[in-house]
Amino acid sequence: MARSGSGSVAVIGAGVAGCATAAQLRRAGFDGRISLWETGRGPGGRASTRRSRGDGALAIDHGAPLLNIRSERPPELLEPLLEGGWITPWSGLMALLEGESRLHIGRPDVLGIGQLYRGADGMDGLCRGLLQLGASGAQPAAEAHYGTLIRSLECASSGSWRLRDRQGEFQGEADWLVLSSTLLAHPRSCLLFEWPEVPLVRAAASLGDLQLDHALTTIAGIRAEARSNLLLLFPPEDALPWSSLPFSLVNFDPAAQQRWGLRRISIQPLPDGRCAVVAHSSDAFAADHLDVYGSHSAVARLLDLPVDAGREEDVIQALARAVMECLAPWIDDLTLERASPQLMRWAAAFPVAPGLPPSLRLCPLSRVGFCGDYLDGEGFGRIEGALHSAEQLAASLLQAGLT
Image (cartoon, rainbow, N blue to C red):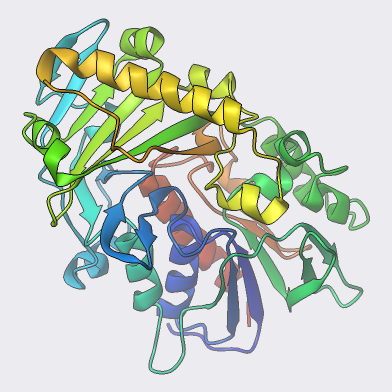
């Protein structure tokens, strides 16, 4: 039964879970205000696509190259995304590298099992599609605020949530707060950004909500693997050896990760003859270089974090050398001279079980909700889990009286 009302929701993070929450609330009939707050330049999160205003042909999936659906009951949003042409079946060639150089073409890893899909015209098509599904006439799925880092949260005497940026400037207010990632609730925010306190923990201290306190204690114990991602863009004259490989995605088993410091390599030919190669590091490699953000990082830019060009170059060279050496048996004429390398880093790319129990998904007393692949359930640690958690949170919000 459709519901309507005049309540408001602030969703922090425009990744898959954040966009899916907005879409599902709209599809359920909620017509109150939804605001979406995102540090990056657009929607997508770890399913983003790197684009350039000055280079219309550039579209590099620097995060997840695909999504896999393994549950018997797929997310409700999957079918409308397919029908709308926002995602399409993934038909690339996959390989698994074992140890030093034993390559198994056609063998997937855990992220390649099940039904495989990719975003149309880039993985960010998934989140763009979710926001489109939630739009109705002139009403968007959400009022999107990109390039905005929410630094502090405070609960007003009225019970509404106020959002402020790193300068303390007021950005917005909403009746309900939804966190689609753990950054503002996890102690790593203090470690990464030298913040004196965890934003939501500080705000919750005076609320007396035992359920929220329990959720925050649980979130503090969730470990997440980091990733350092190398982006290489080869011009047409250097692209053929890459686009001719018998696979477009190679994953690394634990022994290969230890040997090469890599987790995945995605090869993405572009329509104009260029070829993008994206290498995701292993967790161990990223953990050793957590202080290197990458000069193109949105977080580094917004926080004015100092960039150590020497350290960044060392990380780029280490990852590039690993890519070249591990693929040497299958590709000739390897060169990086014109590859335009870039580095970016995720501090929490993959949550490690156990995650946040579904019973702590929504804290009605404080009007705080959580969604994302860090919630226990189907698809934990994957895009499928982000979709499921968003759908479940949207239903819980409406049941709790979001009006």
